[in-house]
Image 1: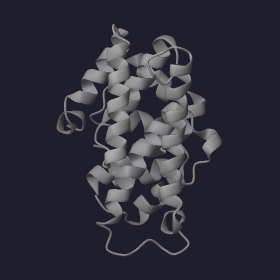
Image 2: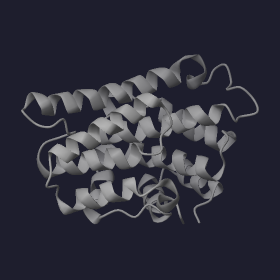
Image 3: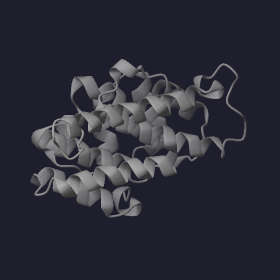
Image 4: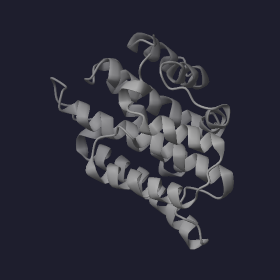
Length: 209
């Protein structure tokens, strides 16, 4: 099992690729094409810590020192580094972190980026990135996916997979919108169908490892 201590060590060593591989190996099996999308250089540096934060909060549902360091890395991601996939991962992670703050015994330090509206701003940036991507696809005559062609369907299915368990009504609305777009885009490529089926099978099945 990937432990919080192991996550912290990989984060400190900046081994994003290995961190992503080990998070996915712990109850998050994906088709190869989906793993390759997550591993793209422009996405991996954001996706890996975001998924690691979600996994860490599954194991330790409070923001201890290690969790806080990971949270700070995710909440401070610049808007220009948020492609749709990175935005979905960031949004999911921050929604989980937002819920975890209520379980943390001590308030966030006053200098923490999340303590002065930084968390809310980061959530808004991620949501806005997803809205722009879906709007661009609709402007091209598409269904509101996060991109064009087979990659667009797979990106959208991955976003649903990432956001399926994220708390918050707005997040649920965004996920429902992507599901509707995927329904209208059918038939989907087989990798997108597999990712979407995995997203819909329930949290316990996704994190069984």
